[in-house]
Image 1 (cartoon, rainbow, N blue to C red):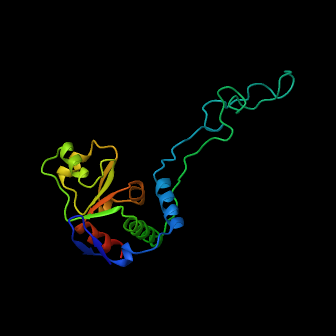
Image 2 (cartoon, rainbow, N blue to C red):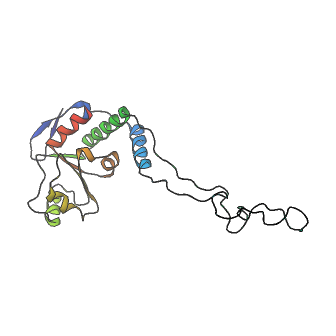
Image 3 (cartoon, one colour):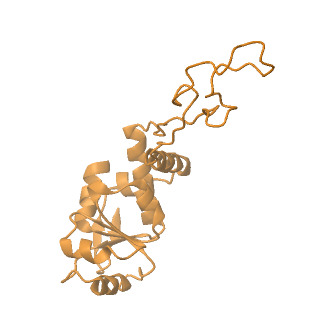
Length: 201
């Protein structure tokens, strides 16, 4: 299939990567798995066996008139352990390579169908100035935010975009499904499109 570029020309792209129907269920699964993989899961609390002290029985079993007690680190005692203590967890979800590739193709195809994907011959600025970068985005009506997906990110583009909260600059190897679905506009280049075809065809 042929896609129009911003300069008025066209570029031929693979139907395998950019012409697939949108699979909402699969995309949701992959995005959820990606977000889950980013969770640290480092919450932890101490059970009665983890709290220090409490080795000796506080008082004898019978004859004191008090309730029997075996340790001062019981969960019902002040300073004791937690009854159902939290433990470090691994939130990662298994995702097959075939599923991931199919989801990325679905996201890219949907971006083409909805007009989110804008293909340029090149994307660069003369100096690492945020002002120049914003002016560049204004040419594509992307001042509210965009994903800049490039084959090779230059230092000028990287440095100029760091202070913009709704702009994300990535190379093809570093992109992820969340970044693709989060932005309304995806600016990419012909060279990046070829890399996408190599990766997901």
